[in-house]
Amino acid sequence: MKPFLRVAMFVVVLGSVHLTRMGMANGSSLSAGTYQVRVTDDVPASGVGQSPGAERWVEFLQGGKVVGREVASVISAGDMGAIAKGARPAANRSLVQTLKGGDYVRIWINKDSVNYLINLKTSR
Image (cartoon, rainbow, N blue to C red; front, side):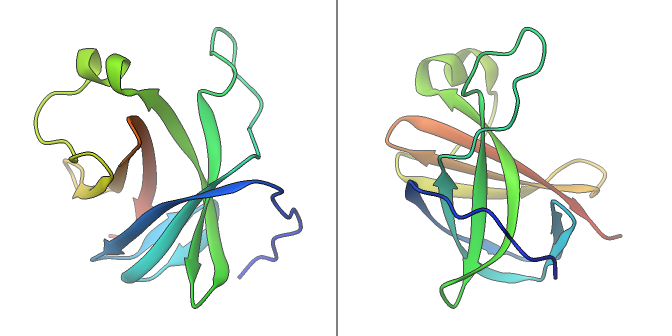
């Protein structure tokens, strides 16, 4: 497991998710199991044409310890309505889906009308 050197100053707990298969979060393996997910104040550099704050680092915790982190896309409820089709999580709930082909697991958390989308590479 890689050490995490940065300590976030501001975190918001998004909720708990249950992974039914292993996923890779920024190079760290997350085994099947239940994780608490929280968003930090750590913002990755914005790409060309991307709005500042469109992505945030989230952390996965088990037993109160950070065991992985990954970048999440942050999308407002209004924008999500124009983008998403199909099943979506209810307010303050999450949805974990294996994407077509089985190469990725998408964690979708709807917290206070803000959507956090996290994609983890799976091992096949």
